[in-house]
Image (cartoon, rainbow, N blue to C red; front, side, top):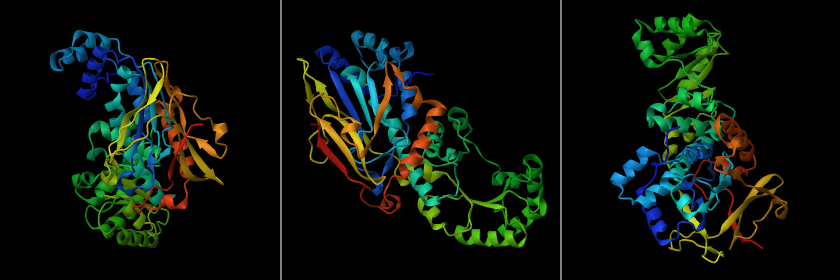
Length: 440
């Protein structure tokens, strides 16, 4: 795997060099990832990107090429370069499982190690978690709007080529059943789908010729794109060519509720009652919700999904919350500016449940480094944090395609815990409050 070490802001390296010079580089520290608020008036957020992040941290190494660049362009001294040459993260990472829901102040990720080895991870951590969580949160809202109807991710052409793969992964965790992106299928084991674009129809001498060729190649269960020309004629041609056993038709333009109703009526009249209708065309959660009463069988979503449906970042930050003093004692630290207040101290988190329904996020704060609260101390709550990285390696359960499957299953279970108000799409306060408590 290629090194991820230069996916880093320069100020992290300059802080490292200064810390090596003044002797603070080896101070034990606790960094925490959290969001001060949920952007866009969302009622919850979805943690995504964790498995990708853990794999990238394993490959966070400064090889000869990276060190040469830093020597020539970043003004680093030989002591710092030598330290980077031997870098390997040896601390621990705990956090919310991928697919978990989070709220303002939730300690989504906790990174413990020396200042030097933890500070250089900031940009990598935030760039992955902020993008993937934004996409997953949008995807979860779309899944709520879609109900039992399947969703397919189709946004690769509207994103950076690597972001497209990450977006497909995040969307699958949050409820999308398939992706059009083949690399996402290969890397993460996500089912892939796709048939034909308008170019296919335009390539042929007639719509009928295009449909016949597609059916010859893919079989009668394929989905035909019927709106290159006249939709009514497209439906008639599709059934004439494929017969009433045609798998599906796709609509990519027009007033979708009206068009879908007309297409369903025409299909039924022609005897194709089992032919499915898929709609695309710049869908977001609101457009999907507006189609709830329409005779639509599936949705394909692109641009809105890969851009977080208007909220392209989750707004998470990476902050130092505790550090060790020279005498071995621990000190809670936090930024205190009026509009960016945060809570210092190492934390444990629990989700209080009442009859299986979430009622509040409990964040227990330790002033020092005393033993953290255990699940036994919160019998009516679910512990939210788990071990993610230790002994220089990611915990195997959370990486690769198996990690994606586990995250998808976990998300499906935790979304069921939410109160009904969490499922509304309108702007509002978080669905449950975050309550801070001091450790006993």
